[in-house]
Length: 221
Image (cartoon, rainbow, N blue to C red; front, side, top):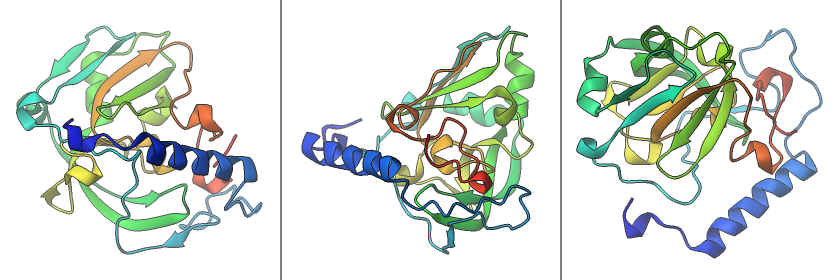
């Protein structure tokens, strides 16, 4: 990060207070969950064609030559990848929807990157591993169950719609877990840790749901 990336403390605190108030008030909840995933658009969501930018007030400028992805914890083969090494892994393309907890959804996003199942085959989580923790270059953290990380459409993406991710959307690499609210898909990923016991992340300790299924309206705890 550069000095220009660091938000004013007042602005950051205002953002955090606002989002925490959303959780306390239950903002955007319809109370009508789609328990069977019958509809493509989850309850309370509106469809958009742009891609809104949301962050914690800082957008890390991670030079490609400095980027590292560390994967460790309860795995047989911990790894550290440079960007060149990451690109040398088997690549894939997926198409999926985005559902943001702030009530917008965007259909048919085309991603290129490395499938999470490819990474699982490489690092080989130990039997006691049950959860996955993410850490980003801006200090953001979040958590998912191992089974969620292993979903068929989950990917660590470096490109969107055939072009490299932009800085504002998480370049050089971000996580994409499409079937969950998008706060579970951290930008600027730098560390993935497999653990036995769950550890709530940045928003989860600030009133947001620990799981985040859009069709169940799991916005808040």
